[in-house]
Image (cartoon, rainbow, N blue to C red; front, side, top):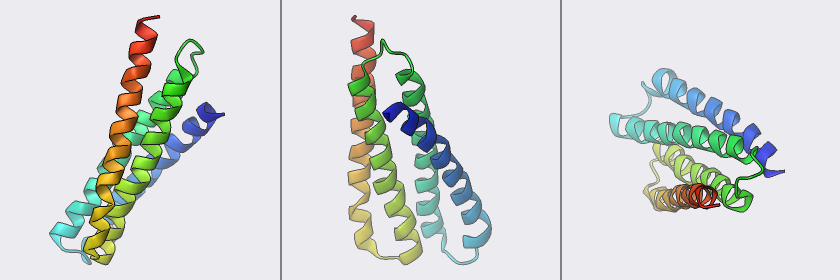
Length: 128
């Protein structure tokens, strides 16, 4: 179940990242200052990185010999991280509400959890 979900969400997230980058370059360039645009672009960049990571998680999960529990945890970490990290940066850049920046580190924790779980999955596979 999770594998299909990850393989569906990953390209959707990547497409949203591309759209967000294009939106910033065209529609937001005249409306936001350089600082807000940089914040937006950081969100889009990290969203793309983790969409690709999520795609790899889904592809690795197709191999039944891989530790599915750790891969599932990695994928969930990447999704939650993207929502919190990139989502809070998009909202912060559009609204200017600084308190939204307090959510961003929680997304970073989600990313770290995802990468650590992916490392454990790789280590578990290599040692079996």
